[in-house]
Image (tube, rainbow, N blue to C red; front, side, top):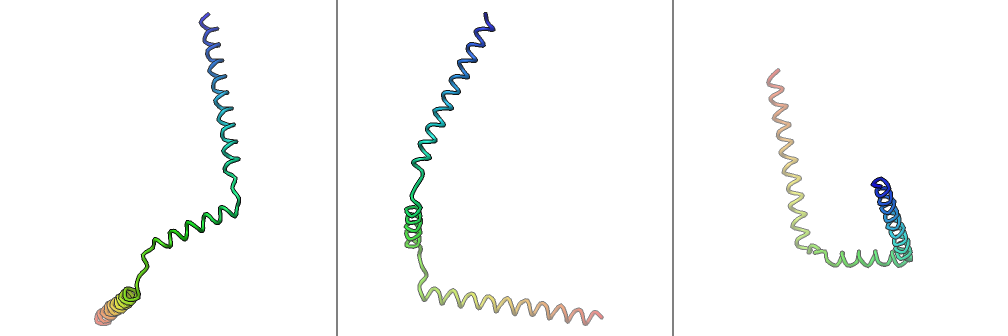
Length: 98
């Protein structure tokens, strides 16, 4: 009797799982139908979001732009001279070592 009871219980479990699976599939089909959106609406929504994000950006002023540009150019010149000097010193030491 115990074996028969176990089989019946497992059959009930299998049936319950199958019902849950069928309900899940049916719900997903409904969601898929709802997910289908007009392509033009999706594009419009995307660009609306882009415009909102662009409005949030803190753009640099003209003064800040000039200040940062000058700082960048000076840094480039400084490191250019620095590495040129290191290279020149290395060549000098190499020529003295011969």
